[in-house]
Length: 231
Image 1 (cartoon, rainbow, N blue to C red):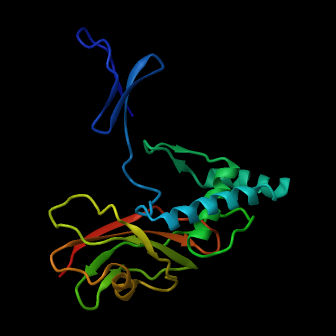
Image 2 (image 1 turned 60 degrees about the horizontal axis):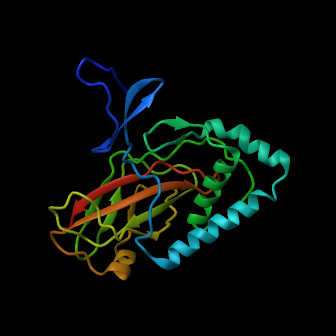
């Protein structure tokens, strides 16, 4: 975070511009820049998916109240191992309830059942060397270098193709699959994609956003975003 010192000409500066916010902190003017990495994905306006999310939130919140004091204390003890990040990318320790909700929403998101067992840190999958290939006949495919170790699913979001000249992704992104990738270093969802959106179109841009979710612990990786042009 940058600190701006007043001078002879500039005596006050407030407001936001271009993703930057000027504000007073400890009697000094400070500049904050927003972290543009998305940690949550919207359903693209699908009413059924939004309703399901609300139902999940209500269920998880009520489930928390059934935990014993000892179980809730386990989440409080685990929380420092799983830092959250605010919109500026600054890390903070979640509350026991926040950690519980995050963990169980991750589980429910990939078709698992909710549990009251606090997570423990595990090694996240290595998706280095990630590539994305799209064509009109057989490939809507992700490849990465190393096979996934441990029990993991992907929460996979994608959408219709858009003009190759556009810099931003399509607003119709939705969750299309939650495949188990244990032991894999590739994933081809051409059939699943085509069933929802139709055959990819040559020359258009396609994007996948995904995060890996541990089936055992309910923790999730940061999101991965990759874009390619359909051959």
